[in-house]
Length: 297
Image (cartoon, rainbow, N blue to C red):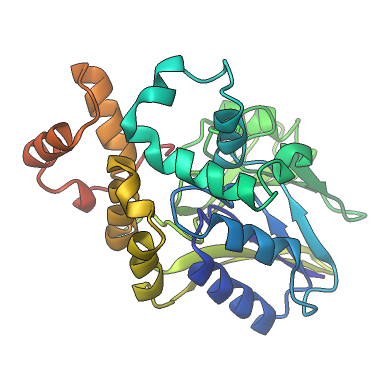
């Protein structure tokens, strides 16, 4: 059995199609979509529809976990008290409002309501595999080689889970940990399909294969033409929805995290998020795209 684990599509249908095509060529029989199908890019509706109606080449179908952006758009449209009240009147959030409206018009806004926070894969004779966008209790907690060993031990439930698979941080990772009891735990991150933040613009995903000797994993990168989605930022109207849309487009161009460093800088400086502060940020941080991202996006 071979499964493709993909995440952080972020409204990029071109990158998604490239990954689905590559997964089919690699012999994947099913898909696990590990959160954040929507928001940021202009294709939230198209990306979700593609995954809800997968090609026949994947006879095992599709399973989903909930990502923070899948949840955010539902919370946004409901004007949830879980979000700061001033966000709803801040022009910076225009791109989020636009994406939520697109999904609601298509009748897809509440599709993620039943998606679980995590999935468990089991195979007789082998440790289980835990898959979550972040972790089973927090979808903004990224897993990578930087995860504390104590946290790996906690998430692995004393070795029950031999493989922990996360997403969310928009970069791929593959690291081995040894628990105090001697059990080996492997931590992997799928990287991002639609918005990589590691300087490599190719779409990333993970192949997970069950063989007689156990689970085998392989991180994949898939090239695709970004010209189409960059045009759709403009033709869809998304680019005119505020500064955040411009930053999302620039992240796609640079394959670097720009949004989160800017957000953290404005919070520290107690500044509004405007075109002027964005220009000031770029002036003070002239090469943010050259630094490796450690953000949780």
